[in-house]
Length: 489
Image (cartoon, rainbow, N blue to C red; front, side, top):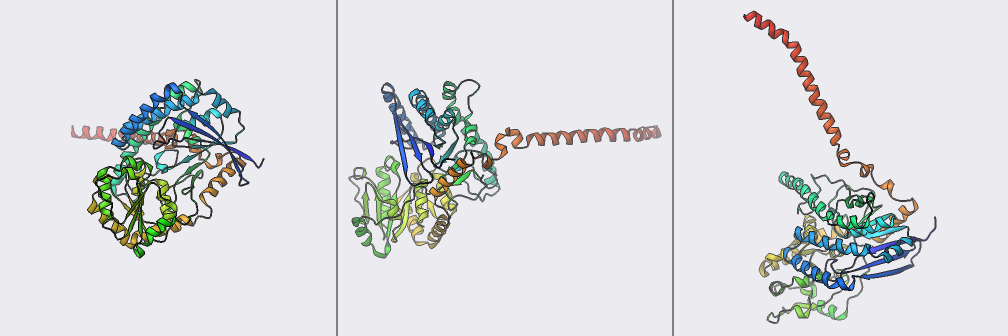
C-alpha cells in the first residue's frame, strides 16, 4: 500500500449566506496522510453567463423569504430545488466531470450539507466519507435512534422526556421522515437526467454508503446516544491556539478591571436581522452591565438616533477565539452556530444564545440542557429582561461550573479532532473501506430491519393458534351441549 493517498474534497461555498449563492467551487486536495505537507488543485466554476442573472434573482427572493419565515419547511423545499437545479448544471459540465473521473483519487471527502455531492461521488464511483457541519439529527444516515430518549430534529426536546414528551417525539418522527423525503425528492429530476435507467441511485441509500460520517459536534455538547463505529465526532476541527489580542482591545478590557467583559458575536447572517429596534434593545441592556461589551456590529448598521452605551465597543470583526480564551471574559452572547458553541466550550465560557434559524434553536436546546447558558428569543428580546438574563448567567456560578465541566470533557480526548479525522480516513484506506464499521442492517429492507415480517408471522401464528383452539374446544364441548339439551327435553 503506497504511503501517499490522494483525496478528492468536494465542497460548496456560497458567500451570500447559509451556503446560498450561484457559484460553486470544486476543490481537489491531494493529502499525504503520513506527512504534514499538503497540495491542492482548485477548480472554479460559476453559472453560465446567460443563466447567472436568473439564478441570482431566484436566490435573492429565496433569501428574503427565508429570513421572513425562519426556515419554514416550504421555503426549505424551494431552496433544495434551487440546489438541485444548480447541481444539474454542474453534472452537465462534461469537462469537469471527465477531469475528475480520470484523476486517480482514493477517496472523496464531501460536505453532507448539499446532497449534490453524494451524486458526484456516485458518478465518480469512488468510496467517500461525509462531513456533517451541524447536529447529526438533521440527517438520517442509519444511526439507531430510540425515540424514548433521542430527540427528533425539530422537536426542541431533551433526552429526559416525560410521557407527553415521548408522545410528541414519536409523532415528530413521522413528520421528520416525511419532510426528509420531500427534501430529497427535489433531486429526482436531476438523478433522472444524469443517471441511466437501471442505475439511478436513491439519495437516502447514498447516505448509508458513506464509509465514515464525521460530525461537527462533541460529547461535551450532544446527548449520549447510540453511535455506529463509522460515526466520529470531530467538533472543533478548526481549533487553533489562542493568540494575544490587539492592544486596543486589551486597553478596553483593562478599563473594566475585575468586572471583565462580554463578547457579542451573532454570526455573519446577523446583519440581516440586526434591525434598529433589536440594536436599540440590546444596547440598552448592555448599558446596565458593569462589564465592558465587545460587539461585532458594523458602523453603517448602527442607527444614528441610538446613543451607544459607554461600556460598548463595536467592530466589524473581532478575534473570537482569542477573546474567548481571555481570562477576563465573563459571557459569550452568540447566535448558536455550531462552531461558535464548540469554541466557547473549548474555553469554558458560559453563553446566552439568540438563535435565528436553521440548527441554531436546536443547538440552544442542548446548551440549556447542559446548563451552559440560556436562550433569548429574538422576537421577544427586550432591554430589561435581556439585561436580567445576562446578569443571571454572569453572576450565577452554576453556568460557569457547567461550562468548565464541558471544557474538561472537550479537552480530555486523547486525540485532537483533526487527528481523529485523518486517523480514521487512514484506517479505511488501509483496510479497503469501512464495510466492517457498518451493520448488516444497512443492506436489509426496512420491514426486515424493523422485524415487521417477524411480528406479522407471530401475529398470524397467534391468531391461527387461537382459531384452532376455538375449533378444538368447540368439538370437545359439542357432545356436552347436546347431552344437556336432551336432558332438558
